[in-house]
Image (cartoon, rainbow, N blue to C red; front, top):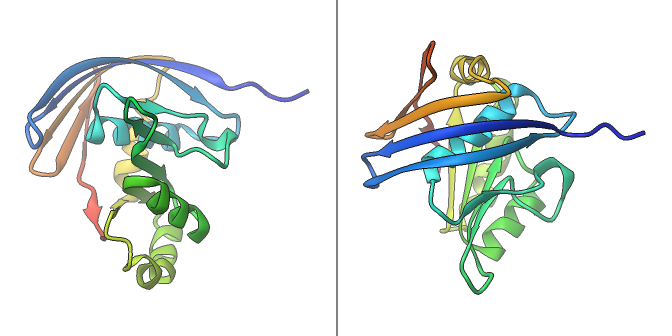
Length: 178
């Protein structure tokens, strides 16, 4: 018998001063049985950093054909493809080929730098790709915010994000690699 995803609910208020975006989103996140709280919260962080009314979570780990998050036009064209982790080269090529913009949020203190050394030259040709690295201590702090029902506030200014629950605030400053 296959294990089912665990459902998390989040009410996320976003104040993105960098983009002038202010909104509240009610989100449902399905955490795949093999997904950690850390990865799920990084997906939520990616949503906050790129939020729009059209941005949506996908089946993620359950599908090789979909990004972790993406944004479509009304005609179905992929505007933004967002990956979390250290995707394989063919997945990066697919994202850059199918979407106007592609963004990767890499994490993992040991794996991400090794992955980037291998991928940096390969990805240089993709003008529509951005790659960010999330430090391990910030990712661990994000994971501590995970609850089945979350009320979170995201404040974004000068490339920094503060994600706050009722009990704690986590500061995240993604490092831009590309």
